[in-house]
Length: 129
Image (cartoon, rainbow, N blue to C red; front, side):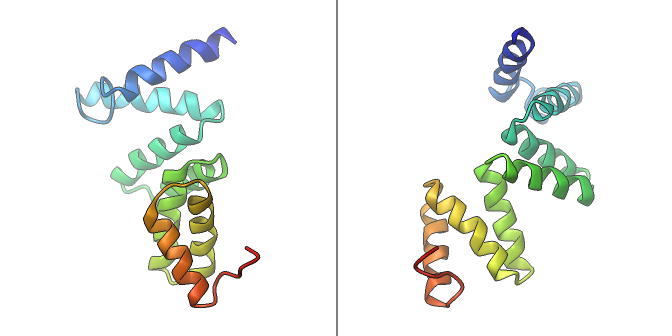
């Protein structure tokens, strides 16, 4: 739709650093937040991830986690990476391994593959997975 195409253009504009989180001004932060909200409402997982970062900076744990989970559900590799790290911190190894599997299959990073390999060696992941 025309609205989506305009928003996509706006999102590219903010993501090039013009509005991105404090690189210009507090007004830029507000504008970036507004565009990320609009983009997230259209199903953009990366926008949900960016919103989670805004909420992290505001120490708003509930909204931070909510946006992070939505971002991961929509395929954001950054969100999966963050959730894997959080799960490891809480010793929720099986949950972390699920995120590392996603990251490894997405080719996200060598580290995610190494963590998945370690999980296999420690019995948290099977060959079938």
